[in-house]
Length: 409
Ligand SMILES: C[S@@+](CC[C@H](N)C(=O)[O-])C[C@H]1O[C@@H](n2cnc3c(N)ncnc32)[C@H](O)[C@@H]1O
Image (cartoon, rainbow, N blue to C red; front, top):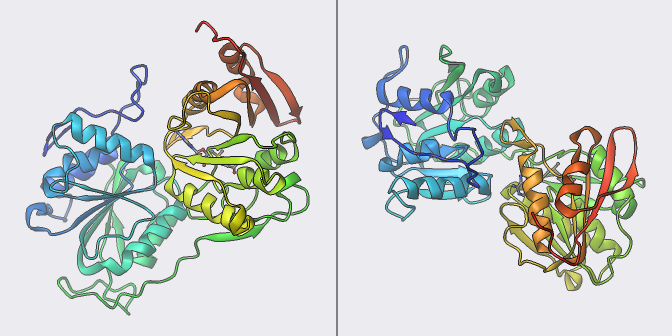
């Protein structure tokens, strides 16, 4: 990526030589050009004298890497983003020591005072709303706020959020199908009015956002019936049980007694918590790449499993890469079909291969998926077997068993 700040070699995470998708796009480039030279009537931003710079929602660390000389703080929900950023900083000889960048998650307390807020608009409006609410008390009337995204990612509702939570908002002209968002933080107590730059803003209220939201599962969801489900902003299907998840819950394996069971891509953790509620002797492991998801799964688990009975493990990261080979009896998953904005089955296929590695001989992978994804063939190729456990018009539940002997790959 060539920018006014330098040229950088960047990759996504986990690195895959077959992956032809770039780790940056026109929205990242437009923002960096604007910061250096200005856009329309907006001048350049003097980052060297700007104070605290926060980058929210960077996808693969392109913005954080290009701006590393100004010691930015990155805030992300994605552990893949965080790993990509660390790897990209390293690759470009920058590193993540305290002297350069600070990597925070969406669950960490934000920097005390933010002077420049750069926002890569996330796919989830709910996550944007939640994060703007969290950051608002740390923004002052002089904070420079610039958002960026591809035109198709920025909607009227996106601009309304900036306007409602921070202050008056305008957009730039589009360039290479990307657009910038300029927001002028209001003086506290006068929403809609641009603030006086330099005015301290300690009084900006920490408006409580609506998140996390909680619902109770109805009676038609197998072992999950009656569970309380806690959902932090931005997670998959945060306000109700997903149709595919419900079908999975209605058809979960019954023989989990004493088994080590992974809820892979756990989201709000309803699947793993249902297993534990049904079988107190199961050892449940929750994994997800999203910090918001892990926080939700922990909260769901705590809301339903009594203190003395809590034995679960929680891991944030890529699939089950963090678990030891042969250490698991059963993997349960409703796998993702998106990676940030891109629709792809690459993540699901990587999860299947990882699952095979961590399963003990005779261990099983159960997945629920849209029928049209055609995962049956992939599992057959990978495991040497694949069986339909249940099916309905839209979804199938598939089971693959790890054979005793290693398969030649
Ligand atoms: C379709 S959702 C299922 C969520 C939950 N199990 C349910 O049924 O409601 C897929 C989940 O996979 C997670 N995910 C995406 N990429 C992942 C990765 N590389 N490793 C682990 N989890 C990932 C997403 O954050 C999301 O929570």
